[in-house]
Length: 118
Length: 228
Image (cartoon, rainbow over all chains, first blue to last red; front, side, top):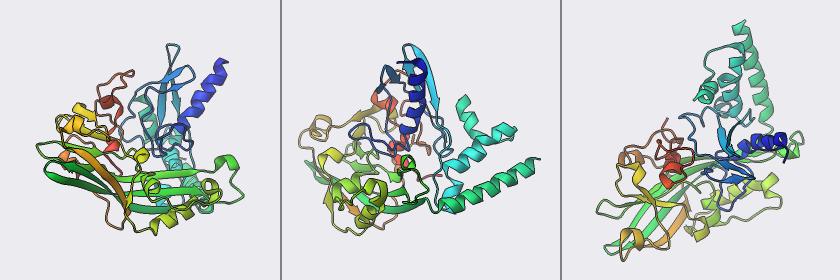
């Protein structure tokens, strides 16, 4: 498969792993997340790398693959999921705006970027 | 400059919030998960009240078909069954978002995944019977060689508890019942190493190609959404 196409698939795949999974790929999988380590996607193997503490509440998710000896890291972008004021304050959008987008203006508190570095 | 940008972001956020009330609906329910074990000393049981919040995109025409979907959030902790002599069986949260449906089997609606799923949850909340969980929906069962050592975790075969706990020990049944009781808490008193974060694995020193149970099982399988 074309390298760019496959890397695009891995980028897409990060949205359907662990917490927030919406397309059930395996019997027994659930939408609130399960262990993915060791599973195969084409010729890529999902590596066993723990998310840093606080990642889920901060709306951060990343996954690493081994593909022909090369380590590929895929990050999720912004999701829009909330339906009330209380939900908004803990929603992926709020977390992304205040925990990620703020880095672009060099504002403090871009917690998602700290998780990327970890 | 910074204050202006912050205000702009807030205004945009409030506008989006108003808009998104039309895009999402949600339902929350709680159920008691009970595990019953036949043992030489008699019946042993443990239970835990678990909360599930289900969010679904509304049927607004403004939502593109590809953007429709469901989202689940679980709050609670694993069931612990004390079998004596320091041995404890844990029924994990790995299937917590779907186990009540699997056991109680509320009626299905046409197109329920896309539009009517929350109607199923409404029906589920109205069911008061105790339902037996079918084997295919069993949560993962584990125990520890030493409760103070998370890396001593071992998987328990639900069809052969005797292999782990000795002759005469067997799984009688796992049941679910909808309840208004508060979410169960306190498992961290038994598992003193348990973090308030769901992310760490039971063996945080593992390598990226270690797919053993302690390396792949995370604290969130024992407790999630309870401690802030």
